[in-house]
Length: 486
Image (cartoon, rainbow, N blue to C red; front, side, top):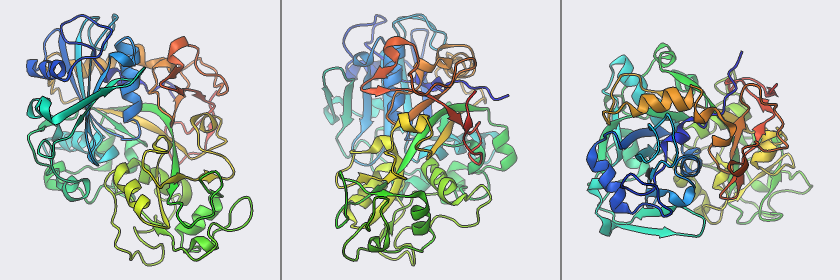
C-alpha cells in the first residue's frame, strides 16, 4: 500500500525570523542570519543543508516561513543573483515542533538548487558507495559581506536579500556545474543532509537520465543498487510545462495551444518549423517559416526526465530520446544545453522559435517566453490536481544517513524522522510547499477531493497560491499511468 503523505517534509527546513531566541513580527536582518551560521549549531541555533529540485525550491521557502516562523513576513530569503541558484532561509520558530526542537529556535537552512535534482541524490549515493566524499558547494554567508547584498521587503512577502557582487560567487551553471568549480568567497563545501528529486531516484540510475556530464571525480558515481540504499520517500506532485518564444508565432492570449500528439511530432522530427505545427483551435503556429529550436537541460535534471517520460516514454521503455539542443533535425544553431531552469528560459527568450520545458511556476519569470496550453487545457496546479492537465510527476525526498550531523544537533535526522517520514508537521496537507506548480498527495485517510483545498485554514492559500489534494497519483512510479487517489 502506498503511503500517501504530503511531502511537505522538508518545508520544515526553510525559514527563520530574528536572531535572539524570540520570534518577532519582522524578518531577521542579513547580519542576524550570518550570526546563526557563525555558531555552527547549538541548542538554540540549528543548521540544515539541502540540495536538489529547483522546481520545489520557492514553495519550500514560503511553506517554512508560514508553518514554522509565524508567517512569510518573518522569513528572510538569501539568494544569488543572475543565473546561479544558491539560496538560504532563516527565521525563528514560533511554536513547539519536533523538527527543530521547539519554539524560539534560530534556524538557517541552505538550499542548493544549482544543478537541479541530481544534486539531491548523486552526492548522497556517491558518499554511500565510497566513490566520492559526498560534499558539494553551498552558500556561505560569512563569505558574503553585507555590502554585497541588497535586501527588500514587499507587503505580505518575505525579506529577500540578493547577492549582487560578482566576487561573492563566480562562474556559470554550464561552465562550472559539471565540476562544481564555482569560485568566490561565498561558498562552502558541505554534505547534503536532505535532497529533493523531481521524479523517483531510480530514474537517475544507469540508463536514460544518468548524469554522465557530472565529473565522477568530484561528484562520484552511483549504481542502481546503490540508489535503492539511499533512504527515500514520496513527496508531492508538480506540474511541468513547455515554454516557447512567441516571436513570429500566432499566439492567442500570449500563448499557443497545441496537442500532446503535436508535441510528440515536434520531438521526433516530424515538424521542424512552426509554420507546420497545427494549433488545437485551427490554423498553424506561424504564418511565415520559423524554425523550431529545442533547448534541453542536462542529464540529471528532473525537468528533463519528466519531459522525456511524458512525451516519449523514454526511461520507461520508449526508445526515442529527446532531441539534442538546437534544430530538432540536426541540432545545429549554436545553442547549448542549459544547466539550470533560468539558463534554458533565457536561451528561449533570445532565440526566435525556441522551445523548452520547466515547472509551470516559472511562467512570467523570464520575458519573451510563453507557457504553452496543452490539449486545450491551461497549465495550473488545480487542473493538474484533477488530471485535466496531466503533465505532472511526483517528487521524492532523499536522506543522508551517514551520520554527518553537521550542526552537532542532529537537525537533519530530526527533520527527516519527525517532519518527513514520521507523524510530524509535514505529513499534514497544509504544510505542502506553496507554489504555483505543486499539488499535495493526499495523506492517508484524506479523500482525494481536488476541487476543495485542504482544510487547514490559513495554510490553504499562501502568497496567492492555493494548494489542492491531487485526485490522481502515479504511486511514486513515473512510468505508471495516473490512477485515482483513493
